[in-house]
Length: 268
Image (cartoon, one colour):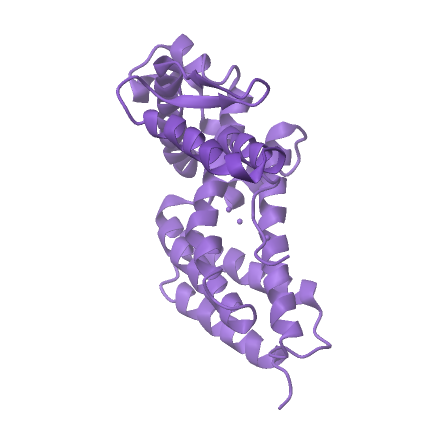
């Protein structure tokens, strides 16, 4: 609007956690007879993170266990709460409506306290976009991966997207409102929005390609055209439902998707 064998929506692949990196490194370099001890030592360090003394991390350079300060965990939790509140505001008033002052009032914090977590209003907006994209992944994309490649997965992606859209008819879609706000602008916020939307459309296009390679869609079908039409259905749905208040918008979008699949289906 949140992927190869199972492609991922995230703009960039995240590196493995330090504990995994160290563990894997040790398994490769340590003789077989010591591998079990290495694994047990690492597991024990991680297990201790659940106790009252606070969480631990593995230093990749020294291979030593270090304890993460409790206040850093609290800071991360506070930032997550601020981003959650900011996302709620952004879906109602847009990204441009966000301000450090408004969030400070909502969170009952000082402006300087909110500012310290982001450093700028722009970084706050980007954090909100990332969180929105992450939730989009969790609700729309990842559940669809449980279905086999092909038309079944493509149908699941559309169905999941429709479920989310049904909620966003009342709350608003950040991808759509953000596109309107930043269509003529340049800068990191617009780039974050464009990157998120393009990542999702790339994943959708891949699902279309799988349906084509499985023989369920005609092999002459233009993958990009199908993706364009699916995206168009969602955009039209939002316009019809939110602006024109059309009660049958969801039904018509579903009918449009079914008709499109029938039109592009492989000949039997």
